[in-house]
Image (cartoon, rainbow, N blue to C red):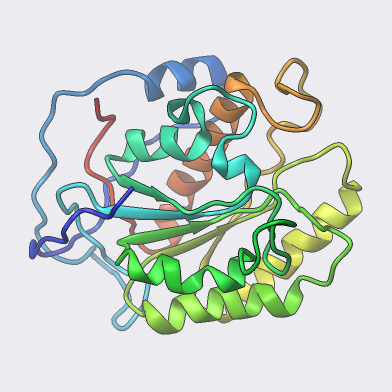
Length: 256
């Protein structure tokens, strides 16, 4: 999907969706509910937003461009339509124009086996070229046995250097039964450390699929219910983070 032309509207703080994961079913229903309200008007930086903070105070553009970097979990492997994948649910809820550059079988450090140069670190220029208003980077721990630390630092650092005023979010890894819990925790710590060093927001999703049943389509990838749960976890973490962190773009509610 090509990014939409950027506007010249002034930017402001987002008014986040106040949701939790107390009832996944109810949240999933909220995500799919259309809202007829028009996007709110930008009116200036967030009150108390720190001066010079590279992730502070983006406004509600007319469909801000959101770039999602990731692997098969962000591609939406396991469901029939893109509308069921977690990134598309989130973009629809937030009123964002989704640019999904995820590649199955990739990771921060490792490319898809048959597609060279598809590691996250190699796709930084593609993300930058989309001129995003927000970047979301997620991982399902492909090649978990590889040393990802240098590539994580280069990926997040490259995004931040090129996009100094753009909100960038890195999530904790998604749960997979074939990756030891200890390695997932370790990988999450590596991402958190790199993010904090580069003014990138780290969102801990809390392994929302761990211990669930009937949320997988093929033994590895989520089904529609699983992706809905992941979307809910992202939105809850994203919303809960706002009071102590910078504001992110939000066009005011679910979109058709």
